[in-house]
View 1 (cartoon, rainbow, N blue to C red):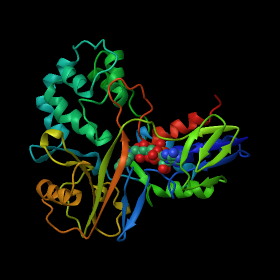
View 2: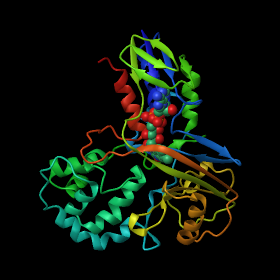
View 3: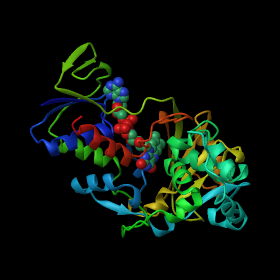
View 4: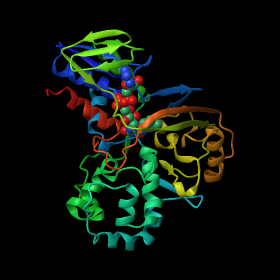
Length: 374
Ligand SMILES: Cc1cc2nc3c(=O)[nH]c(=O)nc-3n(C[C@H](O)[C@H](O)[C@H](O)COP(=O)(O)OP(=O)(O)OC[C@H]3O[C@@H](n4cnc5c(N)ncnc54)[C@H](O)[C@@H]3O)c2cc1C
């Protein structure tokens, strides 16, 4: 059986992995547009510091497929520091933990138990949160959460496609709060987050090394059907063509700004912080990489990643300015790099029926489904 896979991101590579596991004699050709594999998975060792430009943290509880793949490939896994469980939200210019808002939230949480489920098929994240909780809760919590995952607008994005669990809890349990408390507790012993010690791109290199397949780089597929692919003026024939291209929606870009400082300059330890739109910042959030996975530190450096809105003309300057105001960091970084993840994040707007998710784990799960017989 001769198979062509279109796209060499984690979806395409794990589809090849699963196909060969099932049928070791399968003949596979993978066609990739760029001159490298991995798609958004990209690790750099810059100035001796390890930086991820794309995905980096994975909760043990929500990434069973990624965990299995990492274990199959015998890669060294590391767990996050317990302090990384602490997350912050920027509120009126200061970092606060979500728990610090609890006293003011309790009346809204109780009231939510009695609000009837909506009868409409879908609505925006803002409409959902404002209806079930309050407009203020929508702006303070749902907005930064949505920016952190989708970098998108809560007034446009779909609750059904972006947060399917909340949508389901309203319909099946009658309330988000009830759904949250009645959902089965995670039985897995490992808590927290994990990553690959040498960086996520090792996963890609290892797949590339271990997969006995033909890889064609710099090969942009123009058209494909069930048995035929046209790319670069050439026609490829196969018994089966598998598309491992990301979902085709309008996408948002994001600036990824990596910063390294000599020594420990972080006063607050945790995962990082998110910035609600109402704070009127060009920053979307900051990840405290060196505090989450100190095992990846070279010495006692501080490694941070700032996510900045794509409209910002000077992302590095904006990040440095925000870090000084929010975290009191006025030391000069010893290394910085800026990367525009162009059209990286699909925007599932109201009415969208896509429910596969946007995480690496969701991609691997999708790959397993792609290779099963139709
Ligand atoms: C900044 C950032 C941070 C993220 N953080 C996390 C995180 O912490 N945790 C998490 O789970 N997820 C995270 N994600 C999401 C995760 O990276 C993606 O869901 C995942 O990498 C998508 O993999 P993919 O293979 O489906 O698509 P892609 O990575 O987009 O790969 C698709 C591949 O197909 C190729 N291609 C496209 N068109 C063609 C064509 N016409 N012909 C041939 N090849 C083509 C592309 O060049 C690319 O290599 C993050 C994403 C970004 C951008």
